[in-house]
Length: 212
Length: 212
Image 1 (tube, chains in turn blue, brown):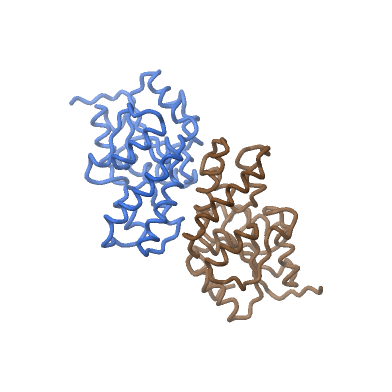
Image 2: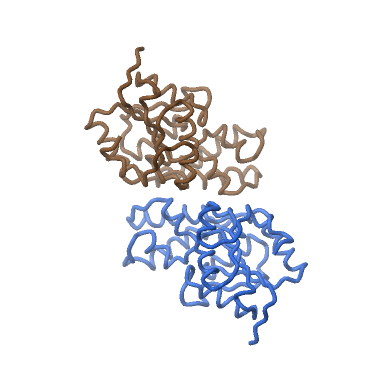
């Protein structure tokens, strides 16, 4: 496939378009506790934005024997509460704005297939093109997901702006020479996002309408 | 009561001794959503540490008609999940350390009476002296709670070190001329706690054992 240098946008989903970070922290903490692992909620928060199989060893400080069980238990708990999720401020409108202005874009998420469907349901946009972690070998902060998404869009990394709420998003994007924009909707402070490589930080997707 | 200048310690409870901040965010978000208020989880997080009757207008940007219902619904949801709470790292050991070393201390919390009992149960320490918000007119960041606690301990404000996880804790303490120490267990970054007045920031209560 030939690549163009036309500007394109990649969007993180969890915490960026859907207000799900605190749901994830809560569900992870329950899953860890149920498995007998005592971990701090704020430590879990610091790992949100990584894929599950990377978050678990990050939080525990080691790769546990029960990784698969933990990931499955978190997923079950998250899907149980997914009905209470809401979009982040301006997220549906930002998607419409990109479409109206003809900006090529795609959602690039570490979420597994079932979680992704639940999150897209929250946005009422199951039609939006999405690359998820089941299609790549390593999740964020490894750049595989973003490489795969840029390939699907047929654009060069240098033409891509990636919008995400976590430092792992900014780190993954800047590793590839993409432009990273942070949003505060995941509860990560502006300074943390900038330090991870975000060149600017917006309050929410609403602040990006007409500007990507 | 005569006041002494003997060093004394006041401890916040929610988020500082019990790992409850993310539980609170989750329950508040559910309560707001059930009442038809669309608010961001990270905005709620920024209000955690205030008393409920201050958090609600802070989050909504106005004082709602249904304040009492919101506060009651959050409380119900929080008590429902309180069985899954855990102490923060080193919290029970810090209390024992203060007792062993004869340091006068008291827990000063914005939590209402029922929540306070649930939180003390998590610590296994319903015997620890506690001042709660039902005993004062205004909650943090108003300093009433800390004034009341220092009076009960019979110490001057200038002799008090207050340990808390939120910027509201640090702000309330420094307004009174108390020394504020931050802990990271509430998910507030070190820079935020220092800016609010904390003179130092510890990772968790464990890091303060033998040092207060």
